[in-house]
Length: 99
Image (cartoon, rainbow, N blue to C red):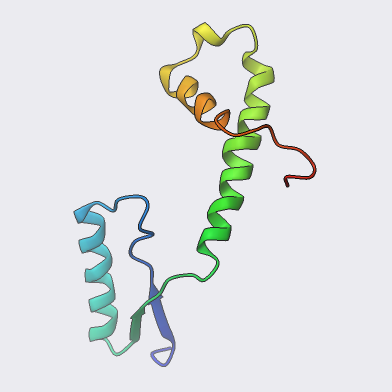
């Protein structure tokens, strides 16, 4: 097992990582390295593609599903859900061509 290379991903440069999270990750990487593993920082090549896919499915499509459930009840929504829908609607509606 120790011949396996272990990659760790620390930061995507968009969402801040808490100092505690960064410290825990670095401690884990150091512990593995101390026990003979080949540990290296790693940044997935398809990270931006994955982020766009996540945004499409969980924000834009998610908003489409929520809209039908909350229609005519917008004033009853929590501030967080209202903000989510505003963010999702900041872009043009999804179409077959845009996906």
